[in-house]
Length: 122
Image (cartoon, rainbow, N blue to C red):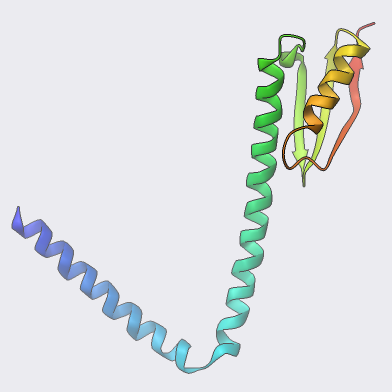
């Protein structure tokens, strides 16, 4: 039992020492060398946050549709791109179409709802 803990401690200390050794030249070179890397990481994080937000919005809209007994949520396809929700499919009536648009627009993070491809059966 003591050997795995000791092995872990040695591994952690070795990793820390290597990190300091490798980071030394980068830190010694000054901020200009580090800054572009930080900017690239920031841009990547922004893109990742957008993707997560769009995925979250799509899931939230779809689950809202499925939970609402006045909507045929299974028949409505939901896609989100940069906060714009696109609805497509066929619903029973114009009332149901309007309700789907309204419900989608109420979700946090939704910037707009495009429902040109959401058709009515009537």
